[in-house]
Each structure stands twice: as C-alpha cells, then as structure tokens.
Length: 413
Image (cartoon, rainbow, N blue to C red; front, side, top):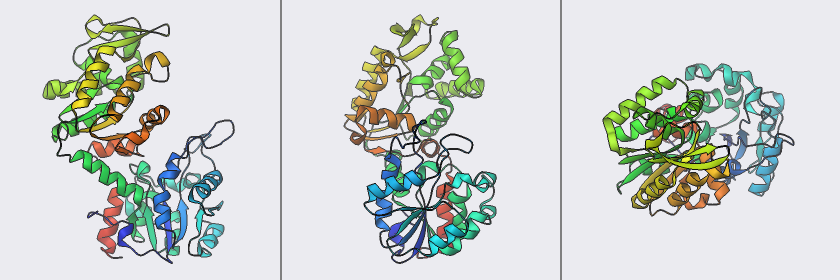
C-alpha cells in the first residue's frame, strides 16, 4: 500500500497475531440473536490468510450501557460456522484467563476475546495521545504475547481508542484485508480519471455530508453533487426555499447546530452553484399518503418525506451519464412504503449504471441489502462515520496508527 504495511509484507505462519476486527452486528432486542452477519463475513478473507498463525481476535459489540453491549460468544459461534473451523470464545480480555488462552494457542487456532467495550479503558483513553494509549492495561498486557497486530476494523477507524491505535507503538501493526480493500476502492473512486464523477448525498444527518461535499468539490474530485433526503432539504433552505414548519422542525431536531450548517450550505451554494443539484419537486406525507408538489409551491403544512417523481427521473438520467459514483444516505423516509420510491429508484439506477460505484453507511447498506442489489455495486463500504471522514479528507486514527507503526518498525518488521 506504500503508506503502511499489509499482510503481504509480513510472515505470520507460526506467529501469535492479535487481530482487531469490527463485527459489531445488529441484534434482535428480544433474543439477542445476530440479525445480520455481514460484518463477520467481511473479515473472513483476513482470517483465512492467517490460517497458519495463532490468532486472538479483539472486537466490540454495542455501546456501554446499551442493550446490545453483550458478550461475543454468539459472534464466535457464527464466525466458526462461516470460517469452517473452530473458533473458541474466551470470556476475558486482559485477565489471566485471556493471557493463558493466547499463550496456549497452536498454529491454525482462533479465539475471540471478550467485548472490548466491557473495559472502561477503551472509553477512558479515547482521543488521548497514542503514547498514553500504548501504556493502557489492554495494550500493556496483550502486546507482549504477540508478534503482530493486524488492524482490520475500518468501520471503527474514526475512533481513537486503545484497541484501535494503542498497539501501533508496541508491536508491528499491519492492515488486514478489509482495511486494505477499503483504502484501495475508496482511493479508486476519489482519484477516478473517467468522467463525469458524481456524489449522491442523502439521509437526515446532513452535517457530515456538507463536509464531504465541500471536500469533493473543492478538490475537483466530483463534477457534481446530487442531493436527496435531509441533505437536499438543507440545501433547498440554504437556497432561499421556505420549507414549511413541519419539515423545518424535523431538520432542527435532527441536524445539530442547524444554523451553522445552514450557513455552510449557503456558502457552498454560493461557490459551486449548479454543481450542487437539489430536487425540483418533493413528496409530502399527508396523513400517510404521498402527495407530490413542485418546490416552487412550498412551504407546505405537511412534512416533506421524499424527492418527487420528476426529480427521480432527472437524477436517473444524470446517473446514467456518470462513470464514477459515490453514494451515501437514502432519498427519503424509506421505512414507509409510500416514501421509499425515491430511495428504491435511485439505488436501482446506481446499481445498474455503467460506472464504478461506491456506497456506504448503515442505512445505505441496509437499503441495498433489502433490495437485493448489494452485489451490483463496485464497492460496499463497511464504514459509516469512518467512510464519511475519509471522503471529507479528515484524518482517520486507524490509518494514522498504521503509518506510525511502519515508521517505527520499518518496512520488514
């Protein structure tokens, strides 16, 4: 990869390897059953390339205090089933039980350690200097037991925590296959030579999308930005459109520091004009029914819940012309069938486009999976926040850790 090392640069056979993955999965709130093993599947390539190593896996599930912050026993079982060989769960992360289990590993064996978020250090050391994280108990107790640390948790790459960045100071740290593929595919989209290039930005959390739009337009990475969902509504408001109180109330609730983001959107519109496309018509939610109205007829006494049919057709035409497309976020309230039209049609158009396509983000991937078209995209990113940060040109602690490790331990550790 140049900037950092991958599994291709080290010999892991017979070595003890700690592997940080992101298998944080949606769980059934009643039974605790894993509802989707997509993230576990993503890491199988890395684990198969470590088949001759002694592997101890570190991972998290849920957030402290939330119902989905549970032990990783079922994750280990699912991983074993998918991998086709035993994967043993160890109900300890840094205690004697965990240390003994790591020390007893034989070549080809895999264990999953306890949920890293059961340990206060993971949060307490967050965003502290890397040198300080390297002195945490997690790193101090586990690093001496291994020869390599494989960092493969791209989806958690925007978080600076001991199990993400702390090991890079202690032992040689290399990228796993998920991280390697993410960087390769995202860079392919960001450095695309085939034009036109396009970003389609939607969803209700518009602040990150603003940063992405600004970075991609400023650096000439994309020729145009098509806006949908809450992002489109913010840009419509920034362009002087009165949306109506029901819609504005939703935006102010969902978008933090709304006035500041509105000002940022106005600045982008002023600078890039028609390169940022907004809907010409929208669909209102009138007592659960879809009612189409042109933007010029706003404000409305009912909330806007989707882009309109004319906009869907126009965006579809633009998508068909593109040769590189980056998409994040649904076009409307896709959970309600009358307002899923924009999302469904736009996702299908992108999936069928003659372009290199990248999609990512939790809701985005969920829509693609629900439509059964996830395999039609060039790259489906595992990242949400990490993806948006990368697209916005912000530094990712995970990648910084990999670079630091190469600088410290050399090209052939």
